[in-house]
Length: 357
Image (cartoon, rainbow, N blue to C red; front, side):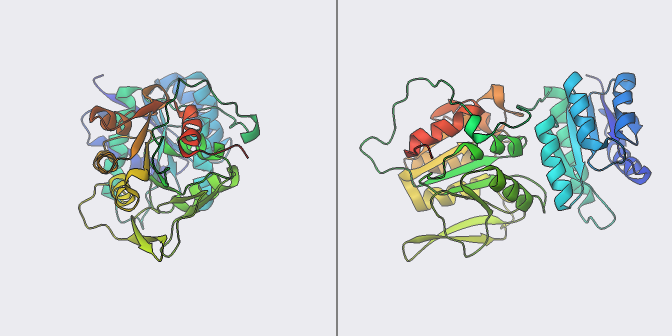
């Protein structure tokens, strides 16, 4: 395409101008129209035929959430949510992702010191989604755990036969991750026998609401990780935005420590850093999972898991919002088993020996 035509939706004239200004210097991006409400956005979709939409979360009238639902029901147009840095904004954003939005950015404001970083992130996402036609893998509304039925899986030969069982699951994801995690974590049984550590690329302030949301949906406990916590079976720890995960043995237990990045990682938190620590502590008992996301974060860390004799599960292309991170890992020969998103909970249960509860 010659230009990527963008529809900018926000009830604030200042924010419409700010986002337009972010995009106007990009030679391949064109703001074809703006809208100040959800109702106007729906109309502008028909009039302007945009390639991609940026959508404010909180607006008067039907609001961003309902606008996403109505647009996604009739059009295959990627929608990026522009979310406020509040708990309510995060919760609505996660619901919008489940309703059909493909990703989100944190709304810039006068106090936001990394405005250029926000602009670069938005432009990168616009280019990726518009050119690849990214589309979320959703089932809306999300089915109850008790109603979920296991899919048919191919014949399975357990890789742990005659060896130590898996002792830790390390899950890495980025774009599309909040919805992917909501299709995975809630379908693990209460007696899931291993701890889980999760890196989800997202802006500061969103990992705690994500953990709380998944915890409310799940049988296992889901926490935002904090220094001084100890890994526990059947507990998932989400590494907070802006910190890296470090794991240490302490009197037979594994202690979580959150540290500042050393300046070498593109992502903070990083899947690579997490997976390397898991491999260092758990060796051949490490189980890596790489889900939907842009880029190749995770390749280095998963290679360490494989070198130590661990096992890696990768999400398949058909159910990824963006088949970047799983593709990069598979291309390097690091993925032992490829599975559709809705199969992965059952694959993990098989691998760790979990029983229904």
